[in-house]
Length: 290
Image 1 (cartoon, rainbow, N blue to C red):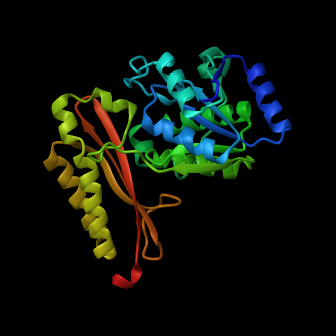
Image 2: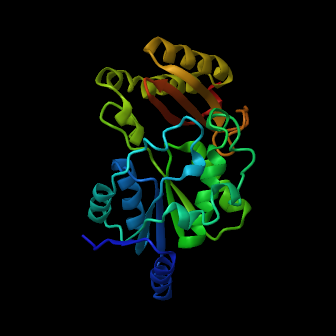
């Protein structure tokens, strides 16, 4: 197990990263908001496999929380997070303050907006969310200057936003999407799962079960994708979940699916008690069947 260095000052972070790069080492980066679970740790392990030095960050970003969302309630578990990161082989942990990230205040911060992929889905339900994500990720990328950055596929739209951000702004960073980590019953791991009561936790795995059934229907009859989508929405309601959306999209740019696409993704968000759960399932289509 390597020693974890926790850093609060940007100058120290940059000095350590530059030292690593000067030695020819490949630097991987895993940005987080803390309250880490096995999904985050899998990102660190993926970074460890592909890179010489792994940097993670913990910053609960106020720019991506809308009015009435859980910014103040978001769990802060730094000591536990540090232990988990060290056990996973993370080398550097950057813990910037809000004043370090936004020295002139949040209202005076330059914002980054990614068109197209940030619209609709979670972008419709949480209008400022992806602008806040794109802004903080741009700043963190400029602070860390990694060679590779790792993000979970559970936040599929977020991953698409970051891929476009990096491409459009010509950032010399490889973005790696890491498969969703699930509990044994299929529920995607999330910091917000702890908001579920015992009875709600028993219902929650149906989210993934419904995605699986929608995927099966798409594979059988791709041309009837709208029917499969409607089935999924009704199934969520029947299961006791309150749908925000369940949509079939083309996997790369998240546009409406077309018969010429071979890679689709089903994306879902639903409320269960205090928790807003999101998940997705990629679908590789065989057009010869339809």
